[in-house]
Length: 332
Image 1 (cartoon, one colour):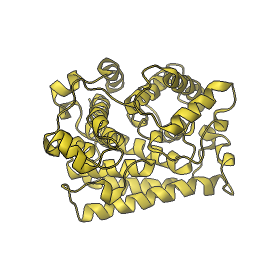
Image 2: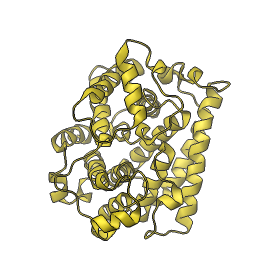
Image 3: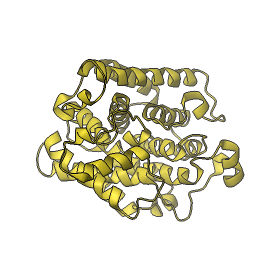
Image 4: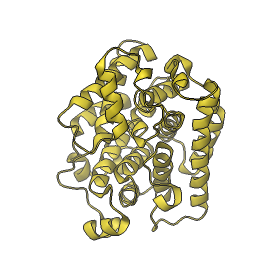
């Protein structure tokens, strides 16, 4: 039940971090008490992170019901789902400016999505929603990488946003497939090095031409190099672990995609067999707490499955029924 565990976990992390986003750690402690005792809010409302995760999940289901996963089957429902989210009255959870701007551009006409993409933005909106790509079964490595980058590219076209989304989906996939936490950073580094100059033209089209790079390989290498630098900071933090300190001080505040991933990985790797402690640590951070905790919950749930989460927390999470339905479809 790893897919269900990851989806419920990301929503739990998102809801736990929703009230603490934009606060520093002393303010969070004053409001919530000791971080190891933080409770899930009542009601457990989530943010745009979970809303857009569901949008990606629905688009994947729609595309896969019509054939082998491809950009031609996935891009149209992704576009529709993103526009529907942008228009929704429930889109009132402090959404990111890049998502709002790009979705508005996508809604105007039938322009190619590459013309709406914000190629200068690598905000964490690119990868806080990508977990479903790492969970959906029966896809190839090429399809997984392409879909992860495509779902980012519709809004966040910066090469680091694409690479960090791909790397995030790969981390979720590895853990759901049984990778051990101790080997995770090495596997991610090897994947980043292998992917460094691989531009997925089939999935991304001419997106690279909307930036300022000399060619597609140099465009995507710029993103992977920033992800490799973020992994360097993660490995340095793990050599001198300080679970009681603010993780953002070690690996970054998480407002940008590569930092959101590595700070979530740090929280997960501090407590790989204590998922509730991991998401509490992620929610008590000085940066983008909801996105960091959302990704931490996805990683923990992918690794440990549904057993990771207290039943009373899982039962009251917003969008619970839809998350469970997606998880059940992919677990079965």
